[in-house]
Length: 410
Image (cartoon, rainbow, N blue to C red):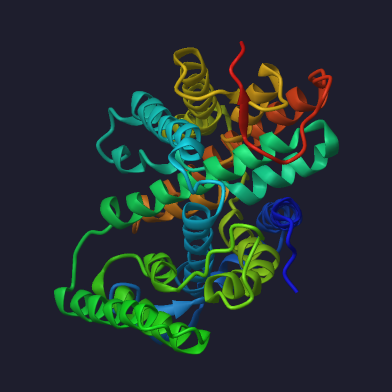
């Protein structure tokens, strides 16, 4: 039975993301250990051995790695789409007053890392395509770090980080669809548009059963896969057409298809799909790695974008918004704590790894270098953000979950 307390629902969401984030950290650590052990060759063979038919000539025979990145991650993007839609129509981004600060902070937090990356790596035409790698924030990993802090992280910061990451995900989805699509199969794209239209009409006609939407989503995934647009975009498109029944006085509605599907998918994504993705994509060999490799333009640009660019972009946007009166200061948090959370936004990880694989197709050496930069930048951001929040003085009256912003004082 749905609760009538929105705060309780939000706490449950944050708890789920936190547990999944901690599991993701463990899966990534395990992948690094395995890849740098005598099992390293078996690990890479397992991921890239043929495991299924050839669904499209572009990808060739399906492998475990492809099933995870192009198949299971479409379910991850479906959940991301559902969360975005819920927050914009019936959540903490439902009004422009609530959207203003997270949108400005997320936009700045994507632009500054991209510019910083280009400053370090943009002189090499072969590396320019990686500009979007440091632009993303990993919500599960970042919330997982916050969970380790317990009550030392005010609830308003958790809510702010969640909303920024959701807006950030919207930008990442747009980047993947527009910047990393090389060629288009117009016939398949037309089929995808027809399927999307059918699903849209179903929603407008009052269809509330989930099964037809799930069947349509699977067909949409295959059509998008054939079209040349990355197949995971099908997840977001499917989320757009799944109906939602607004429940302003409660966290969800029993008769809402969107809420039912979100609740059903959330544990599978948090505890299986995202950790599997982390395990399959972070196993980079560190044998023979020296300072020259760490400070090469590609990994350095990514690490600088994540660690420096994110904190500069997000914190600078918050400071500017508060000083100009565009938005008030985050409720119940000191400026030092806000800065700590801004550093945590530099944990790119899942989305950065995903974009990194798309940015350098057919160039495994560059993909591996990108992973080094992602791991370095995300680890620095996690450790620095955790340290600041762990030792930052607590406000005298920490706020419970409520409005993100209240205090306009500096």
